[in-house]
Image (tube, rainbow, N blue to C red; front, side, top):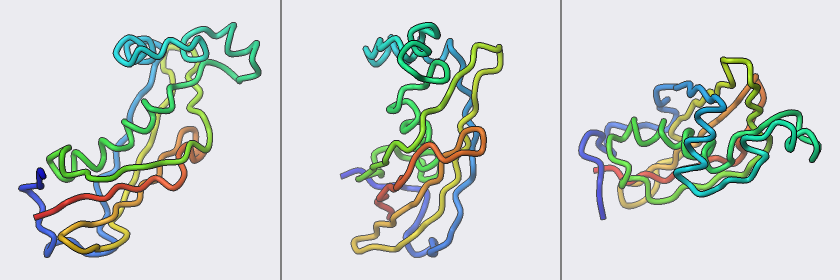
Length: 144
């Protein structure tokens, strides 16, 4: 098991806020993610198709949104392997307009509970355009 080397369990309290982050998302980002993930669903890159199936525009991949949110935790703990559990519910898509600026995912997080075995539960909030895009977003992190 990999453990974090930068944050000690004894130094963390319930309510500790992790540094917030914002992640820009453009159409270019989505095409690159599609290539990396193999998810070429046209709702993520073809505006005409997305509109035809009832979406407001092209939307970001759910797994991309989930991964960007997790970066707040991995950046804080300093070791991606210290995240031993992570889960979310997808509540709303991140709409990515083709306007040159795209969308922004804003993520905040805080320690919600201290668990056994030097683990903490971190609850995350991810929004785009002021609306929550992930629900029940939680990570369990192994600390030293």
